Image (cartoon, rainbow over all chains, first blue to last red):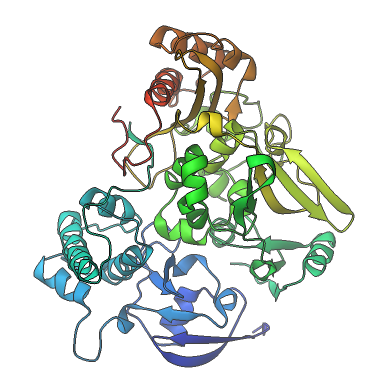
Length: 183
Length: 340
C-alpha cells in the first residue's frame, strides 16, 4: 500500500486537547468519526446539502464534511457530545425532547449544533427567521415544526434572560432579507 | 478525494509564488472545491490554504464605496451593518444563497470562483465540455431545467450559480487580483465569461492570479429602492431558477434617474444589459415600462426544452423585482419576501 504524507492536527474538541496525524484529504467530519471516535456527528450526504454533520468551530456552525481537518488546526470544535454538562442536558436538547422535535434522530446532532450556532449569531427575531436560518438542516422525518418550536422556546428564554440584564427583547424586527420567492 | 499535498501560508508573496508554479490551487472556505474533489470533477495535486492571509476586510472603501476582502466570509459580509444599510441589495443577495453553515464558511473570493451546478458537469460518468473539453454537451438535449437561456453556445448551456455575483454585477463592482508579476483590476462585467467554444474557462483570471479583494463603488442613490428576488423550487436553500437584482434611483417626483438590473440563473455569468436600463431613465415606475425593459433584457433568449418556462419566469421576475424596488427596499422582511 502506498503511504501518504501525514499532517499533524491539534484540535480542542469539546474542551479536550487532542492531537492527530491525518492525510491531507481527511475531512473534519471523518476525523471526528473515524479518528477521534466521536460518532455523534453524522455523515448524511457528505456534500454540504443535508447539515447532519454540522459542528461548531470557534462557536460558528459549519458543515464538517466540507472542510479539511488540516484546515482546522488549532481550532476549538464543539460537537453534539459537547453540548451537555455531565448528565445535565443542554437546554436545547431538553427542548427537543419536550417538543418532540425528532423521530429517527439521525439529523438531530446537526440540528442541535446548528441551532446553537443560530443562537450565537443573534440574527433570528421570529419563528419565520428560525425556519429560514435552520434551512441548512434537512429532516427527512419532517419534524420541522417541532424543531422550530424547540429553538423558538429556547430563544424566548434567552430573550427574557437578556431583558433582565437590560438586553434586547424578543420583539425586535429582523435585520435581514433573503428575497425568497417560491416558484 | 484524490491525494494531494497541503500547505498553509500566512505570506501573500509565498502563496503567489506557489500559485505561479501552476499545479497549486488556493483553498479558502472549500465549500465548492472539496465538493468537486469528492466527485472527482476536480483533482488538484496541491492545495494552498490561504486562510491565514488576512484579507478579511468588510469596510468603507474610497469615495463612499465598499471594500470586501477576498477572505471575508459571506455571512460576515451580509450581516455587516455597513453592507446592510448602504448596500442592501448585496446583503439580500448573499443571504438568499446557500445555508447559514455554508455562508459561515464560504469566502467572498470563493463565491466568485464557484463552478456551475450543471448535473452533467458534476457527473463524471457523462460527457461534458466544461469538465472534459471536446466530449460534448448532453445538457442541450437532456435534463436542462436549471440551464441557461441567454449567452449559450453549442458547447455549453451551464449557468453560474452565485447570488452574490448578481448583486455585484448590478452594483458595478471591481475584482482586484494579484500574481507574482503584479496587480490587476477587473471590472465585474469582464470577470466571468460566456462559454463560447471554451466552456472549461469560467472566468478571465490568469494562471497564478489570486483574488485579493472586491470593491463596490458608492451606491447610496440606490439603497432606498433595491430588491433581490430569487425564484426557486423551495423557499430556501436551493439554487435559483431565475434571480433578479434590481435597483432604482428615483428623483423627488418619483421618476427614474437610473436603473440597474442583473439576472442570475439564466446564463454562464450574471446577465445585465445596460442599454435596456437606459429605457427607464425619465420614466415613472410602472408595470408597462418594466415589461418593456424585461423584453429588451431577454432579447435573444431561448429555451432547451425543460427550461422553456424560464423565458416567462425571467420576464415576470424582472417586473416583480423592479416593482418591489420601486416600492422601497425591504430592509427587514425576514425570509418572507414577496410571494410569486
